[in-house]
Length: 171
Image (cartoon, rainbow, N blue to C red; front, top):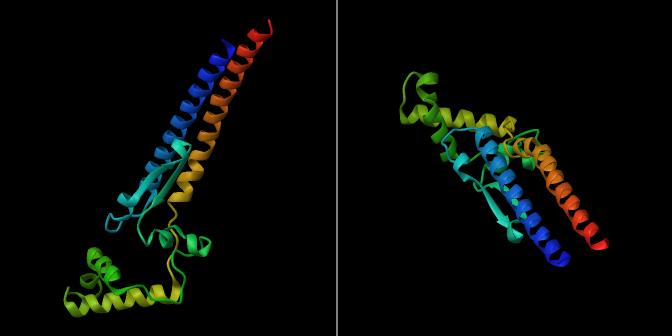
């Protein structure tokens, strides 16, 4: 009887742990999406959660190539992109057009003003880099205390229930 009760307790505890991992992962994902900078709305939709080890492991990540520069992972958070290398032309041109920089800077939106604005932005990034705009790590660190508190609650409850079951066996 006590063996069956402990098996039920273990199964219930595993289910509670899996549920908490899923809740914390989804909360981290939502916060990362909230914090992610928006230019073309490609970064936010790329943020997602994957589960492994039967729900006992969760990973929140951004599945887009430039996310690591935005987060600052490659440069210890000092820059989003280190100085020294110019970024590719097309993404910068798209951003320049989206922001309306050719018209603001040169008074017109022509192919030449787009190319000039793109050149200037690429040169600045190449010379100075870009500032990191972390979104994954802050989301993770915001959720950690909540996750730890909930896991403590789940495991303390399970330990108390196991102790009660084992206490009945001794009588």
